[in-house]
Image 1: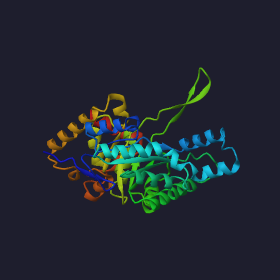
Image 2 (image 1 turned 60 degrees about the horizontal axis):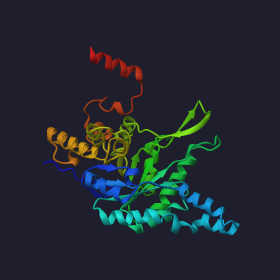
Image 3 (image 1 turned 60 degrees about the vertical axis):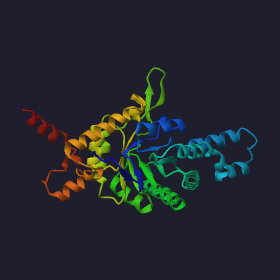
Image 4 (image 1 turned 45 degrees about the horizontal axis):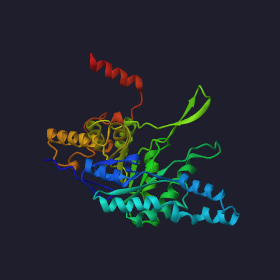
Length: 334
């Protein structure tokens, strides 16, 4: 019998499939269902800065309209209230389950989120996942400045807590390996590739803009997992586009320490998790692997480069010339 046990963020997981932050992990009942379905760990529904902002807006409409009061709130006066619900969720989830529970925060302000992370740690979270995203709107601001904000947030949060910190990155970055290495130096224990944020859309009938749910790109995640695994001193986790057990196998072969799945479970039910596990087990048995460690990263860019199989063995990770790839595919099909 194969052993699916693995480690991620220094945490012991019974298997590498993690239920990502979504509606399924919003409640204690949902977390329990994830555990019963076989999840290795769960990432709780994210706590967003907008939740804190809404508290401020509500306060402005009430008795707290004095400038001094608002300043107090902006400096953290509402922290003990805005995180109560999530802290209680963490406490109850930890009491009712045995799998690792990871808190998720949508970060924008370095001075606030270390305090949120500390509260979630005190509530019993096993780790914290930071969702950092700055849309580069200002033509006068260089990309390096946006990256600096990433480092600042991670450094502050990592210094504030003793539990592991991971960063869920956006795919819209100039140099993911370089940024990843700097984040590791700042205190991140893992990178999650990627966060698929809400996307803009236009309603051509009503003539207004609207937001659409972002869709994960499996092959984009696979590319960067394969390029980063083993080259950065941290765990690499994937997020986005998994539809079947074969996708899980591919990501682990590329070097993923954990595979986050959410949309599939929302679309087809949490029972689909068992199918992924069964498929992973069957593939391992068929190929003679006794444990996840036996094949994790075997097809990463670094591992293929070190094995010296052939000069072009790992080119698929960085090749972008469509014409050449198309020609090779056509020749193989003849």
